[in-house]
Image (cartoon, rainbow, N blue to C red; front, side, top):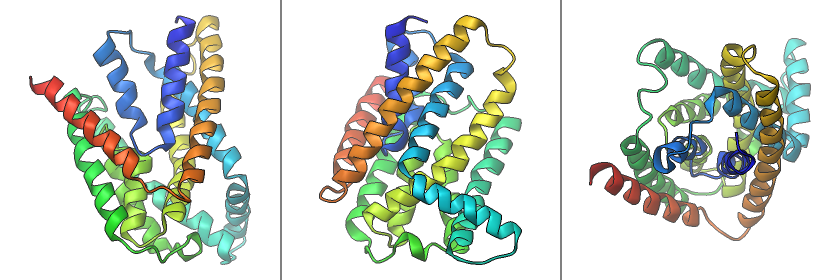
Length: 266
């Protein structure tokens, strides 16, 4: 793959993975709208590994707490760290189960169309705006319970529809439950860690033995640039939430959704 194409792919994945604008939708649109060749599953795994590294680094304190919580769960403890770890496990189960069902029935490519992405961008963008403007901001990460983790896990499963945005739908669900903007984003980002790991394992199992030396080189470059782009985007978004709502992302989603629907139906 040409270096400029690889860097474009990595930057696109890195920037859109954690912003509520749908990374999968943008990755599908890149070849669909530009005529560029599809990057393939191997590079998809690589750039996801890069973004995973970024979120783990940024939330390293919470990740350390969750790891200690896993150890505590094995020892039958029930402290705050254990509840965080348990919540992340519970929140990941719905998307894994539904993803397997889709994979075994209609196939993962069944919804990969410009029209589906356009509608998802538009509808779920408006839903995010509604809850961000109307819902209270009374809860924090310390209030996260197993029952709310399950509810957010069901919200997250909706992101299997391309264009929905995994981070966006999780933030929407958290805001609907009354979490403040920063804590809603924090919960959504922490939920991304086991989800990206699970999807990476599933994809990696199919492609890990198929890579040539050139593909492995491209994968390493893509992962590194996706890591840098994701860390930058994540840092900026979390800092901006001190003073800015999610409305700018909603405006982008609505405009892009309208353009995509015009493109699909014109």
